[in-house]
Length: 412
Image (tube, rainbow, N blue to C red):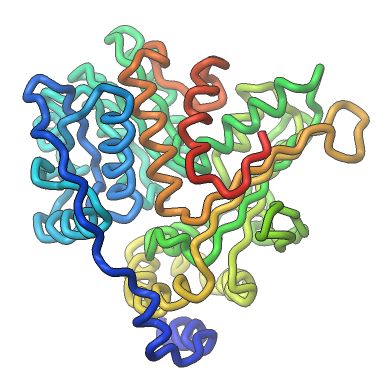
């Protein structure tokens, strides 16, 4: 743990006043009218985290803009964490006076049932999702007839959720899993690219995030956990496990981001899109900045699998390194970029290339998750449990239009 943290620290020059100057002054909160007590109630589980807090903010912003303001609640284990998140949201300009806290224990079915009772929408951002086996919160939402979406990036858990689609359909509840920015919007991009070809033989997904994208330790611990599991790729219609963080490829993400190195990393978009869209060959790659972080990730694969796959230890390492992570984030920015390349049969170069980038991962993942959530509330998703790639064209277009806001690259 100490050696890893020292390695990261070595990347960071003394910042002094430059670091302090990068800290922005608090914004004046946007004062909103007291929400209608009859307005739909939306619960964001994990809303005290960076991704969850961003989702709360975007639900607040988009729902008001679209004429259906929500009563928002944050679900979590700690009232202290909620208070810190509330203050952070207020500093960003959101009026949090009506924001509620709901205590939630993901391992306690009675806690889940009580938390979702009376809600119209539940959004699960409580990552990391690696090594979870039971979609308990989704099941509680089926029982309570509450629309549900999550940012799950673990394919076994996503499949377990998808298996409950008949129950959700019987209950008349619309649900979408794995629907953040990636996986999520990336799957919509894959569906869009495939739709522009008579037939698609191969589809490559590529992602770049500077630092942690302001998403903090959770994305770091999730990456650590992904390094100890095979990266699934689709080859000739079959899923094939490959060693993660191999098969390096240079990818041009457009705009000021330019060309970045990427490596194979497991992504549920590969199996879900391959199956839903009928694409026989697919892979997913990821890279980050600073460049040396990529090589540190590669070096971490040498750790014993039992250690690298220990969720508690990897989360502890990420939290221990948080001060260093935050400094590096301020140095390299928080850009998130995605590229989808689709090939027709027999093509050796892409026939369709789509690129999207935002300047802050923390913001755009919340924006994307909120966009999916609003579509659930507005009737754009039929009852059942769906992957993003399975959504209708008109629903896909509306979600993409919401995500287009603040994009620095939009080539769709």
